[in-house]
Amino acid sequence: MGGCSAPNCSNSTTIGKQLFRFPKDPVRMKKWVINCRRDFIPTTCSRLCEDHFEPSQFEEIARSPAGGKKLKPNAIPTVFDVPDPPSPILMKEVKIKLDYAGKRTRGDHGYARKQLCSETGEPENNEENNKEDYSCRECDRFKAHLEQQYLNNAILQRQVEEMKKKLNKLNKIEKSLQNFLFEDQIRALSLTKRSRRAVWSQNTVQSARRIRAAVGGKGYEFLRELGYPLPSYRTLCNRVEPTIVAPPAVLEEIAEICAETQEKFALALLPSSSPATVVGS
Image 1 (cartoon, one colour):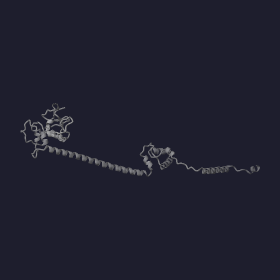
Image 2: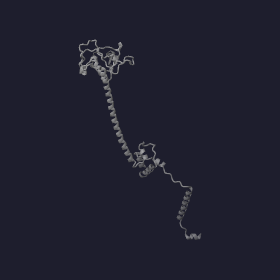
Image 3: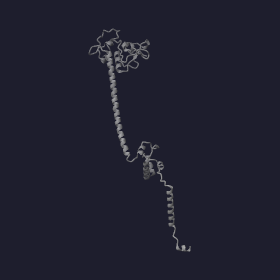
Image 4: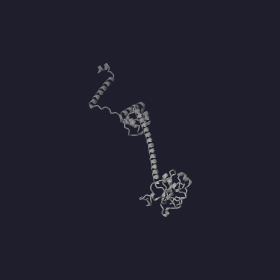
């Protein structure tokens, strides 16, 4: 593991110093970089050692998983050994003034705690500023989340409106189909072409027979191939209407009437006999 990223500091874990990663939050990371007096972009390998944090920046009881010190969530490093004044780039960025230039000794690491406000000239309260910054970040986060929820809500409302339009269109189509199709035929439209789950009503079977009688067998099968909801020819054959069954007595009377009618018809067809034949006999 590398050493400390602060200028004029060579501490590392090899001499027992604990290192801390730069925060992922851009606002806190910027504060760390400004206090370091370095013009660089921290990487995932950049670290600061424990010597650059005041004791108040550590948790009193909580410890890290390794058993070492643990920084507070809003901890800011303030103890550095950097030549005075800071770099011009950082001076323009933070816009601060130091009223103790030339009075600090090289061993003094607390100059970052003596920064003055550029307008009031009074010492800044780091803890209050950190709390305000944290609150502002929370507000921004909740505001962004709320805006995203509003956006999602608007998208869902548009989808609901589109679904209502589609439902109304489907209802109109269904009413139009009811003008020339039965309900079982409308249900069959949602099934596959060769599905055996279709249940045909007697009205549909009778209508199918009339259609087949009008267009013929080939025309009927052609309509079924096109997707028109009609039962198969086998179904039409299986659904033949039962014949009327008469009582046995009625059947006997019908049989006698038929026999008498046939006998009379046969006699009427015989040629008439001549008188000579009748006398000779």
